Image (cartoon, rainbow, N blue to C red):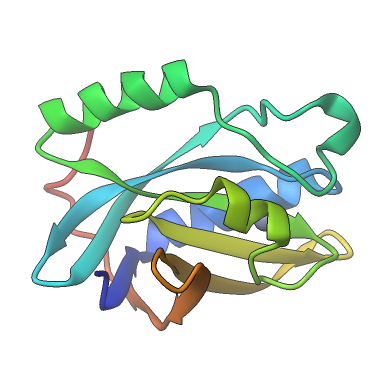
Length: 151
Ligand SMILES: [Zn+2]
């Protein structure tokens, strides 16, 4: 179970830039990092194409499982893991949708960026509580980058 979520400043900026650039469609990608004693630290964000059906990309996203596998290997080679997934909600709250709940995997941090009229307005981190069948929100600590972790 994930207790707290820490994300590097540059990573959060990158996620926000991506969310802004993709507006009014949803953007998505992977969050790489590590987990120790209930704390998830996110130190790298990988932007990926939104693989959802083009007619639904304004309020849905999907990640190609082949890319997921590829990044799992790449992260592992760098001593990291896929810690979570980020995506944007164009003109919708930074709260998981019913679709997000259906598609969620336990153990991942879901970072959601609300993009309001083209600008990132709020960001929230969630994990799935599988037994309760719902998401739980976690406070986000924004940390200064540690340049050692570069892949
Ligand atoms: Zn969503």
